[in-house]
Image (cartoon, rainbow, N blue to C red; front, side, top):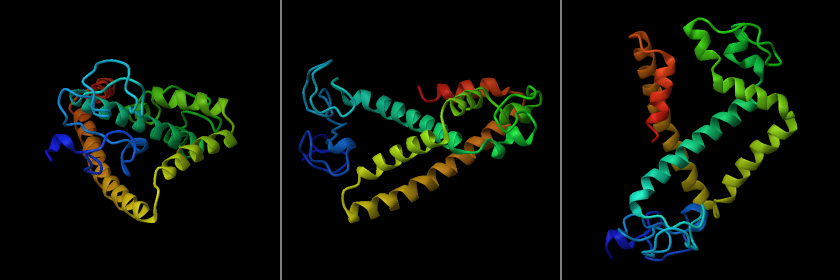
Amino acid sequence: MTQEDKCMYCGSSSYGTGCLYGPKGIHVHPHNRGKCIYCGSSSIGSGCIYNPFGKVHVRGVDFNAMIKETAEHGITLGYLLRRLSQPIKEWHAYKLGLIDEMGNIKRKPTLALEKVAFSKADMYVIRLKQMLSEAEIDILNNTVYLKKLDEVKSPQQMAEHYELEIDVEYKIKENIEQLQNIIMEANNLGLDLGTIEKLIVKSFQ
């Protein structure tokens, strides 16, 4: 059996449902060149019956782009949920006197530190916080958390999932620290934060 015949998650040669570790239980064959990674078809466009994210056939060459998009969405969702759940009094923008405890702007950020503490993304989060109740935010967080738990089927998988989560968390923190150092160094050398922000977003493309 060649690498092209195997599911990247469980090593099976099967297509479709039945994978213990794949997204929504679907086998994924990213190395099967010229064929859909989910159903094995050589067709292009709509018609895949196993794609867990839609009905379009996905070829191996498109897989990395899909992973990047999924990661980008996950990072965005994680940031949004964390900020929505965090009391405004704990925000650096509040401690710097830029906003009050309700999120209303007291003064515009002028210093570099203030601009980092209160970005445009934070303004959107405040608008959402003002639209949603605390109960609705809790329900949103719990729904995402329970959905993740539901993907793990057995105690053995839960243990493996936890170990993998710890390992990935450590690696992500290492990379985030490196990214923070790069941002500070670039900013100290004269690159404005807006340009740095655009470069970070561009790196996902």
